[in-house]
Image 1 (cartoon, helix red, strand yellow):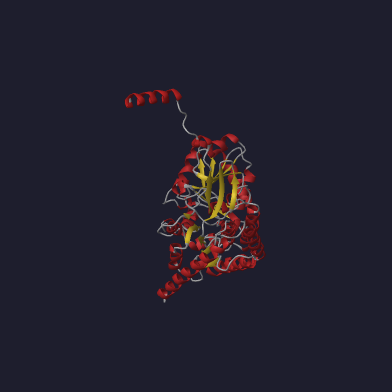
Image 2 (tube, helix red, strand yellow; image 1 turned 120 degrees about the horizontal axis):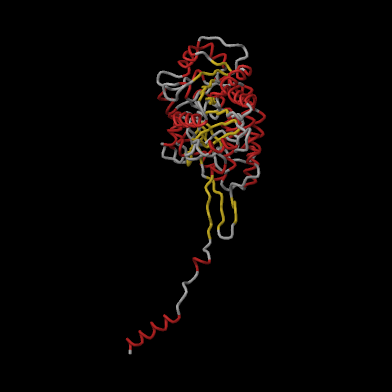
Length: 472
């Protein structure tokens, strides 16, 4: 039976890729204005269904909460559409005296969709693909097949109604890794846009196709002594409770100097941070990760109260985030790893330089190239850390989950966050339509290259005399 499903999934992938290629030929002939009209129609249609899709995603996956997922769906439709409105992606982009730049779509894109953001990712990737004149076929996560497929249907229907050819947006309907692999390997697919777990991103990068993927997030948050402590903790609280911590840019640890410890514990308790006792932290640590070291999917996107109950201890009713004291970073220290739920590690260091070393150590373990947050008013420490922390998003005084995706910062609004070479990614950008085009350059020869070399008249005379002598 499973074999039959895999065959059906592979056949479906081939059909969708072929349809997308046919649609691509029509999409390539469309003007920027026509593409923009399609994008606007998709964004509006998706925004109208933001709440219903959020409910569907929570019900199917069990991850996060409806309120946050609704906000993410609106972010992926309204905010992304606003950011790309007026952006030039096809045709002549720029004319300089000697070089013109022409935007050229890359072609059919395979869009890998994660279970943590199964509907918002569809809208975001569809908008940036269509804006750049590309078609896209989605591969859903098996835990989110129904909500992802419904999201893709809404996008496809709106796109077609606005003039896009049939097949411009497709989605696999059979939950099978075989289908996903067939899609990535399809000759029609020219680029893979991968968002998901490490195994899926690795598969994209080893497919033999150009791919844009992301690495794991494991961002520390440093609260410097110059920060407004109350505001800093409020930012972290907002970030870690947003969709129950499923955004990969969210903070995974708090790092402070020792002279900040007492004040942090007092203010944290007031705001709903629960600082676990050692035995409680050990109980929860066993729940967070499997014996293999892999994150337990059963804890992803669950509330603090749910996690505490599952681990076997109770917490006050106003608890929002669970915090464990951590001393080191490494595979045997579970709290030093990425935790896609409202759980944090707490590192208390002797001084600023020790904080810097620990932050780099944590990111080197997991999360290189992704995100780091600092709360400080001191520009000196911001510059010092900004020059040394190995990340692509260095966030200052903002909730990391929201700042990283561009909701509370001026970064491009995106749900695919590149980690650069240090993180094993092909890009360090918040991925935009400009990452999904090629640029053709039309270049004129310059005066310098066209000039005939200067002739020495006296040399010509001498050579002529010599030749005449030989002949005479």
